[in-house]
Image (tube, rainbow, N blue to C red; front, side, top):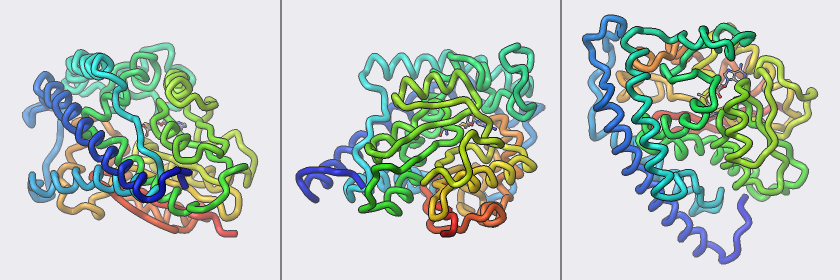
Length: 352
Ligand SMILES: C[S@@+](CC[C@H](N)C(=O)[O-])C[C@H]1O[C@@H](n2cnc3c(N)ncnc32)[C@H](O)[C@@H]1O
């Protein structure tokens, strides 16, 4: 739990400030996302986009309610002292413009790949050689896949533009579960690793919430690791989540955000077993990923559309995966869950 002088009043003020920051982020990234979509509007007529909606139309009111709930939950957790106010937006207007313009400038290239249905362009890049085939793809049709510095610099802004500024608040559902689980616990000596840390947003959140713990990250992408190192100031190493470079039962917590929907079905149980292996007995996995249709039937059509428009080759199988069963086979049992907008979080415990 956060150490803070000034008692409940100070936490309440922090919560108000977090909600205000969320409102600014929401407005900014909604605008940037709108421009991006206007420049590269996916249309139903595109030959390669095979999407026959099954779920009912998504109501704008329900979508807005789910979206705003993400910011409300984030602010409520700050007000409750679970984690400190988070600076995860651009630091100043100049940076905000630069990041948004970069996403907008790249939108045409993303759209070109989408129109061609080319989600594996990156295989022509020598940088991608030697990595698993499932990894050598342009997920989200993004330029450079996971392999270039430009992609790593752009990623967080792209995600925020996609989710209208709610990405940070959604990820922190996993932080909320972990912080509540450890409330009052002495953090000194705790070891936490963020697996598939990407460009480091969640690592920065972890560092803010657990300033006395030893925290590090792993990812397969050298470029994203460099971005994570500079964003969080934490130690990160290159590793495949299928074979983590940590001893059995050596970590108090592992966190894993937005990885599983990008893994092929045969790899998911391998990674789940690795996450369980490195946890100490009593240790926990704080997991976050896309909501599944069963979690949000009202938004199911949006979830159906996502893999068709954003090159997510393993998303459909992820959507059907029984996650508690997957982790139970790895020896972890569910100890908590939460969700906000398009993200669900699970807390999974390794028995003592
Ligand atoms: C959608 S991004 C999520 C990144 C970050 N956790 C976040 O919340 O923004 C998926 C990340 O998983 C990493 N990744 C994918 N497969 C991996 C694997 N087998 N081992 C390690 N990292 C992997 C990618 O390099 C990328 O950084």
